[in-house]
Image (cartoon, rainbow, N blue to C red; front, side):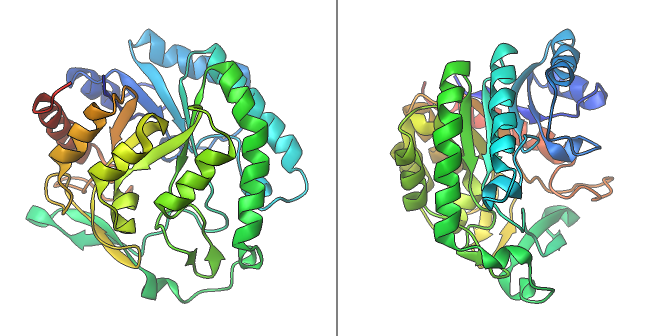
Length: 319
């Protein structure tokens, strides 16, 4: 059964109550909602977070982004072995607390990239956008010195050491696509940008614990058929970001969930077809009336709309 989830802050506020009022009791812990950007958790810190949610009747379904992984490991710098050890212990701690999924990415140097955050959308709402031509300026990033081959070598080094621990801990890993899924952004190479790249990742260590965060917007920007690609990955999909974009990896605009080019009902049916029973959250929602747009893509009203839309799609599909 698909587990609808929401990014929620680490301490209770009205968003916890709104989630429960919508019937969502599954939380994604995300760095955009953690004020200090915590990545390295002690067991006691993670236990305290877990207790906050449990006491409110909410389960932590995913630790996303707020995980002990930095460019020290992605770029193969001194200290990566110590960081990988921290990641291994983090997986053990998540397993101990029944946190089933950890979402990470392999975007070195330049992270999630957008060039606009105030694109006019339906009814005066705002969407975010990316245009690679506008990314051409600015200083040269130090990570331009790394090659795609080196990124692959470093990813293989990482996976060979963490996936066995994830298996032992009962935690599933979900690798997020590069966003945008280009060969490079401002000269910094990117490697997780195609179905073929994911096939290579999954072959590095053949285990359901080495899986995919299927971010639909990124796969749409790759130009693939979304339902077909969902079937292609099957049980290696461990986490879903339900969203859509209009455009491609060179230039795109985020869309309302019900107003993009992807057949979202067919996508939801594909998840049913493969028996997906993991967490699925709405992602990159429009900023709506009365919202400040100081956190583009992650305000509350758009997420409420998206959850209702996703519930409607689920009701139209066959389990």
